[in-house]
Amino acid sequence: MRLVSPNFSDVFPPNIEIKTFPDGDSYIRVPELGKCSGKEVTLLHRLYPNQNESLIQAVLILSALKKAKCKVRMVAPDLPYSICNLLFKAGVDEHLTFDCHFLKKEGNAKFGGLKIKNLSLSKALVEKAREKFGEDFITISPDQGASYMTSGGMSMKKTRGEYESGKDAYRKIENLSMDFSVSGKNILIIDDMVSTGGTMVKAVENIKKAGAKKVGCAATHGFFLRDSMEKLSSITDFVFVSNSIPCKLAEINIAEWIE
Image 1: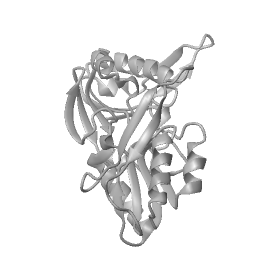
Image 2: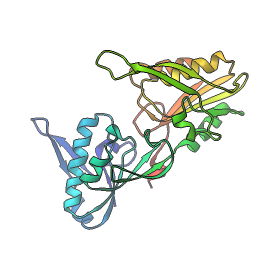
Image 3: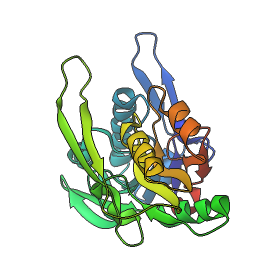
Image 4: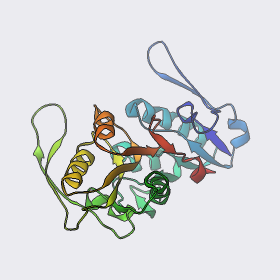
């Protein structure tokens, strides 16, 4: 049985109610709970944006499901804080996610006691890019962490500096290099996510300086913090992501992998 949180309503119709009490606490109601008792259920609940609030809501939903003795398969496209142990203790039996940043490969894994099925959207992203380029292109990742998303593991090499002073936890990119030629070629830069866009912007700039013909960007998760969406759109031929996070640049629907 599928249980859908309101924050997943752009993918499937929601059947979980989430409201807010006057003091700010979350109110959770699962109308179908009686039908779920003792059964296997798939819970669709995003943990981003508003990750702190969303995590508490997830724990409350899971508490109700475990009291009903449900076996829970949770679908949360992004995993903030790498909170596998929290989800495991809260009652998740299996977690399905997409291009998990800290796993750096597709497949099954166990982390913090939690069974994780990490699916990659790389093939779908590449096929969509093929429609946009309309001709041959090369796929590369902007760093080695996402090299598994490219056909030949082709990636740039990234060097970061120390964390800068101030309230933001951010390390500046000191260098982004490549040991292959892109001159006269169409290039798709693919990554698991675009956060502040620093890595992707730097990759685009370096590839264009090296003589690339056309440059497009694709990622599974589009956070697009600060002004990264505008920056990337202004220096590339196209940018697109999946709807793992609701976004106006989303062109890949994750519903296909959840059915």
